[in-house]
Length: 264
Ligand code: GLP
Image (cartoon, rainbow, N blue to C red):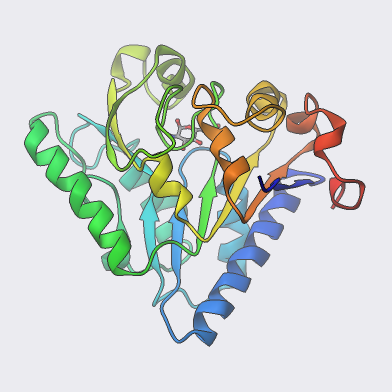
């Protein structure tokens, strides 16, 4: 088993700079390989510092492909909290990504309530095919939910799972209700990349900041990998970097942090 490299950064901003370094390195590798880079984008508050750091570097991402992790099912078209819209505001426009090269699971526009199961399943399969067609993700950015979910893979998700429709737990809906007017407005279902899909990325960067993430981080990294804690799948990945702040790392057993890497 490969232990992920765990780095405790001074702050989310500091970690954001480190993510930007990792993305720049991936762009360089793709350039040497004469292929277009492929980025895996995450939604939520966690990756915002990384997107800000990347935007300030004014990298040429015009040839980059970008794939989102997940999307709610049932929001009206262009709902401001749909992940397609959030990514457009927070990443696609600030980083000058080509919108034609950005894919969101289930389709580039929102998955409306009228979308039937057959259409959703077809959209999930098409997303997997599109990901394969560009050669897979070079760097996948990830946050972590308070119950240890990554993307919208809730506890119990198979480590082999692919892009699919998933039901959100009440905890996740409650956590995400801060983005909506009320809990009732939070969708009950989403389309998400599977854990198996995420795992195929060549490099994974898992980020977590703040005391409210400490338990999930400890559960994901402090014990053996288990499907009860979806984020623990990263322990099995050959190239994962975990970027934390001190508060998010506070419940990790100290043996998880190697002395040379504990402090960036
Ligand atoms: C959502 C997303 C996840 C994200 C998580 C944590 O549920 N589907 O991809 O990691 O929230 O969000 P935040 O970064 O805002 O804490």
